[in-house]
Image (cartoon, rainbow, N blue to C red):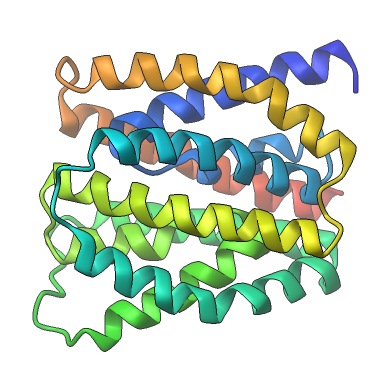
Length: 244
């Protein structure tokens, strides 16, 4: 990899880490669609998963006092069902098609954030399990397991601290299991490991900045910025698939 590739990926990791720290999600959604302009999709997925695992584990520890275990357990258990299928998609589907799917997933995440009045509180717990399965598929296929979980918790009207706590708990488990699956499947290449090790300190800086910005930024204003960034990210992944 060239110094320019490292530099651009460092900027991507820094920005995605700040957003992850602010909202509890967004690292994979933002980083993977942008990384694929500089590295191949499997390398981007493995790198983002490894870095996100460390980031989520740190933030999970910070929010360990929040009582949100029941929802987190449902989502982790159901995600295990979808993860093998997601790996199959990553290995067998054409890279252009996977990039297109990634872009659509990101735009669906934008949609879930945009519907402020959407309410699913009366739906049974089986809906939670369904969202967990979908998240598991996306975890190993694209490293963007956030959209269905964000959609679910947003529609269940979780408070911000519970929202972040659940997401970081679930992401920590899913990302760690995803890395194990990648290692067994031979997807942990030297390039991906090198890039992940390079990115972790930058992620730490992003988390440091993001946690200190939480109380200083108007959530509604920053929410609009994130929606705009995710929209551009999703459209970039789709355009990359069409033009590659």
